[in-house]
Image 1: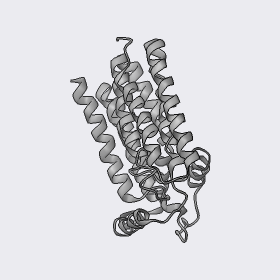
Image 2: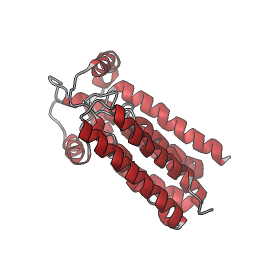
Image 3: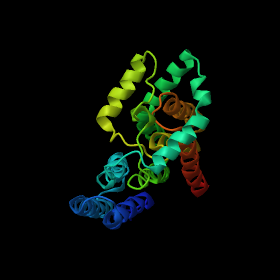
Length: 265
């Protein structure tokens, strides 16, 4: 594999440069716009510098940093006001689409809550599958799919502002929350910005990771796809995301991985 800047690195740089420019148009105060623009620009320079100086192998591990970077970089540009027209639309759409989730028996709701908790280890496990079963080119394509899916969700954050359905005023709390539900809330309380990504970033990246891994190792990819489906179901059942977030997240994740599969053939 060439030591030239890889496609996923160019994509990360482009995403950061977008926010370096778009920060000027965000509906937040001037200091936050300036800080975000400078941070995004600095990070873009660092990513480019890494792509030109480091060997390929360590660069294939750096997306573990690029994912949270892409997740957090838009946050300062999110306006402080909540409950706008977009959130209202999400709530109304959820009222129409959530009937199936309310009908889940307790044992199945518990299982899909466990499924949602797997969203955090699923990415490194999928990466390990591709690392062991594929080539460096396959790993680079894997990251392209995952980053495309994740950044496609995060980039909307400053303009499509909403809160997760669990955090809305008057939102019904799950009856007798399970230990798994408490664990999910505990983890999210420490690694999340408590804003709703549209589409669901958790769902999109896990779907993309599973299907991209399946292009290299079909049997492990199938198992990972089952867990990714559990993430999607758990996101709805646990009210971590709106149903439409999850539906579009599934489509985005599969589309991103399909692009990888086409590129591999």
